[in-house]
Image (cartoon, rainbow, N blue to C red; front, side, top):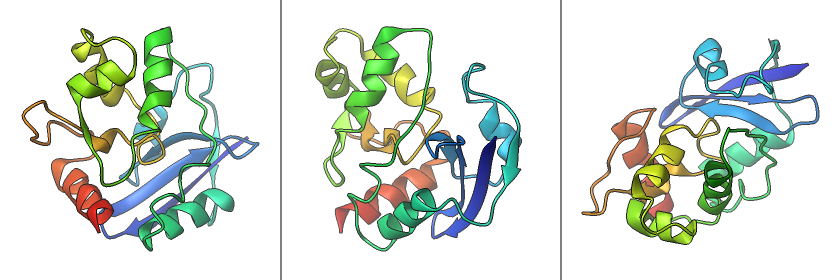
Length: 164
């Protein structure tokens, strides 16, 4: 059975949902577990129960918030999608370093499909495990923020946090 936990952060409440083996299946800056579960692929969805702490996942988030910007790099995530490009793009997104955001165009290029800028943007928009797969590190081609499911104020906070 999956477990979920919400913690307070400077950017607002952050909830993670983990599988029985501890892989993150959903995460975002919300306390609404039902909304998070809507982002999870049906093959990975199911019942989740509250937990006060998610062990290594919660510890990694705390370390990240305390300034260890690499703390989330090795946290296992479990995502599914209907397409090979999106799965690959999510993997590539994890390689974008803190403090070094990229544009959607560069992200598409890094993902191996330079002409697929819209598909790259869709990978960001459909990412169910925010923070662990850092879609906040992808910006519009002109350098402006673009969108972010959890709000531009949260995206701004994350990018500022990673600049220092």
